[in-house]
Amino acid sequence: MAILVTGGAGYIGSHTVVELLEQNYQVVVVDNLYNSQIEVLDRIEEITGKKVKFYQIDILDKAAMTQVFAENEIEAVIHFASYKAVGESVIKPLMYYHNNIEGTVALLEVMNHAGVKDIVFSSSATVYGEDNPSPLKESMPTDTANNPYGYTKVVIEHLLQDLAKADSEWSVTLLRYFNPIGAHESGRIGENPNGIPNNLMPYITQVAIGKLPELSVFGQDYQTHDGTGVRDYIHVVDLAKGHIKALEKNKEQLGVKVYNLGTGIGFSVLDLVKAFQTVNHIEIPYRLAPRRPGDIDICFADASKAKEELNWQTEKTLEDMCRDSWNWQSQNPKGYCE
Ligand code: NAD
Ligand code: UFG
Image (cartoon, rainbow, N blue to C red; front, side):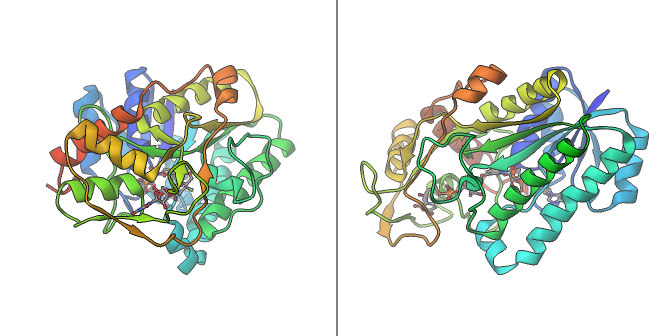
């Protein structure tokens, strides 16, 4: 029996595939390589010493996906495949609704047909929108996402809830990630954004490597301890391990379960910059810049439900995240395209 990982060549997917292989799961990866490189599969095999079965397929291609289910004994699916750039989703909403929502519907139809009714879904803290106060709890309302990307997550959460309501054989876990950063400690896999990064940590590492001249710190008048935005940064390896706990939970309890995956601790932009500088002994030049539209002051998790029900909690520190992000970037200045 194998776990099918959609988007398994991507940032979080590749780290999760490593953890699955380390736990002796068999893994089948489906990815269209829209936002990833084939090289990542060799790196995964190098780290784990194990083979990954890979299909370069779009999840919207139902015939090809049906074939994957016919050729493999799939017991459950971890569904990462998605577009994820918030700004791009505002400019190209149809592209996001098509890929993320229609892609998920197509996947669920194929799963239903194959009789595989076990799924772990990559949701996001973005579903909490702007109005809920941190620490964010799973029970808070989630219908106020303020961009098309976030709204695809809200819709897919509803969709999976409706599906489980209609058919009690479905086992669904919705994982709401906070801000994943860091990389595998080997430095062989990591985050590899196309073009100029939108997110803070890859921007910092590209400044550190000399690819970008300086960091812009967006906003200094937020209601936080130093005026800069506060987020719940989580090491991608801790996040990856949460998926294994979710697979186990799906086996013991049918229906829909929802968990935040975060540390429960918020750090500001300047906290992160300082930690990065201290751990890696590298100066990060930065300038204070206006707020970025759409950003909120503070976003961090109440991580207690995952601890109680999944027996999962983060193990890595902010220092680990800064060290491992830099280890990856410095060993792979051009990402996977060496
Ligand atoms: P990523 O872009 O690195 O990985 C996604 C992978 O899915 C890529 O390899 C891409 O090629 C593939 N893909 C996209 N559309 C596809 C399709 N139609 N068919 C097949 N493959 C397809 O992103 P990531 O950071 O690893 O994120 C993984 C999941 O976690 C996504 O669902 C994302 O929305 C969610 N998430 C990410 C973050 C974050 O900050 N990285 C935060 C919250 C939630
Ligand atoms: N920031 C800067 N300069 C930069 C980039 C970011 O100051 O160059 C600041 C932001 O203003 C924010 C913090 O750093 O205060 C974190 O920003 P990120 O872009 O790294 O992360 P976000 O919290 O904005 O968003 C991320 C993902 C979303 C996801 C959300 C919640 O990009 O997809 O976390 O999970 F929805």
